[in-house]
Length: 440
Image (cartoon, rainbow, N blue to C red):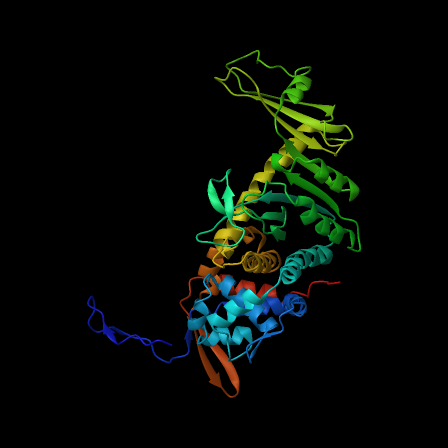
């Protein structure tokens, strides 16, 4: 560890600060993450996934399992830059969390990432899905609200496949993502060049996810929500093939307005009142092979001359129009999940030259996101399940600790004056009641 020269503080000359070889760590709370992983059986799931990666060993001491786990630990702890590994090689608690005295330096982690192939990225993406499916299987969840969307990851430099996206007005990548709305779990991420349209490749992205749900030992009703960028016949057909219900927004056009005119007013009767009118009709665009149910919501705001209309298409025939619209509107919460994935877990980090390496980095971030999402679902009180990773780092993971050895035991001393000691005690007590997730 780099030593800071002994420095006397001016506000109080009796105080001096320096770094030395005392076994102190700022990451003692990661022990609770390791304990959760073990109790829930996630360490075994990660090991099995890592075993499928093509690159078996980078250097003389580091296996692919070890390097993948170290990347996940760095991500969860909030160290988004690989160079942090050089300093954390000497962190006494990080070594205990990782189960080794030989942590990899930055150059080894970078070589590991660069060696991953397109098939490896697919295996890692499958791990994201596996973590979510194992929770659903264990808790026998029979209805899943699935939100699909695209987002943007900016690039700075000459990254392969980075291109200009006219909608966002910047250069970068344009990945697809899918989340389980009621659980905040990620189902997958598909990296794409920045100039791809919103729905490009969505069939290939969602088909393996739908198929995986069909392999569960009980029936799960999937309900898909998407904005107008996903209003494509191939997605409707895919959902209907897998018996997935969908509520997808349609772009407003003259044909839809003409059908809506038959039963909803264009001009409100009372201009000084807000009003909402719901309706529905059957409709088939030129690119559709069959008629589908289209819902319309006509909204008038005080001061406006005309109704503002919104349309959604659905294959849910029994639910009421208002109920479906309310369900669709809750899709907006997905933006918070995307923000958490990017700002909290560095899913939008694009500092590698090759497209595959950037895709691998984003996918590993997605795995880290799901590990913490599972920790919140399984070990935190219900009222704390929407806690952000930044809060968890502040309250739990970045707790100062001192490592000591006595009578063949390793003891981690935490500060007695820790403000969040009660939360930590409750978390650890909950972890010790857990059983491993049910896997295939």
